[in-house]
Length: 102
Image 1 (cartoon, rainbow, N blue to C red):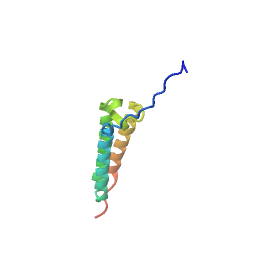
Image 2 (cartoon, rainbow, N blue to C red):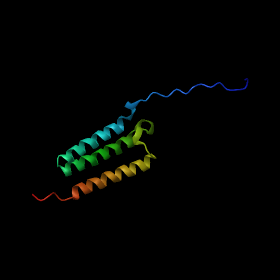
Image 3 (cartoon, rainbow, N blue to C red):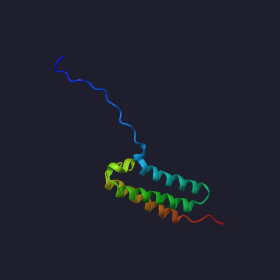
Image 4 (cartoon, rainbow, N blue to C red):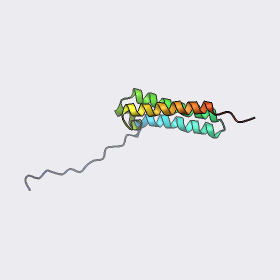
């Protein structure tokens, strides 16, 4: 069997879950904001959710794509436009909604 390449089994790379700390931090903020909304503080929770999107925006802006983990979905420009737009729109809606009548 000369001329045939030797076959080496592929070894799976060990999962390095701690490398996904940017998305974990953002999701922690989202979970905290949803808990605040569930406690009947809609405006504060919604602003916290917008803050989580701003955090995702800043992390995506500052970190290189290799370190951004799951925050790097598309190109940096597209990610920043989407995250920034969602953060602004969510903050505007959170401030726009009138409080419930007392």
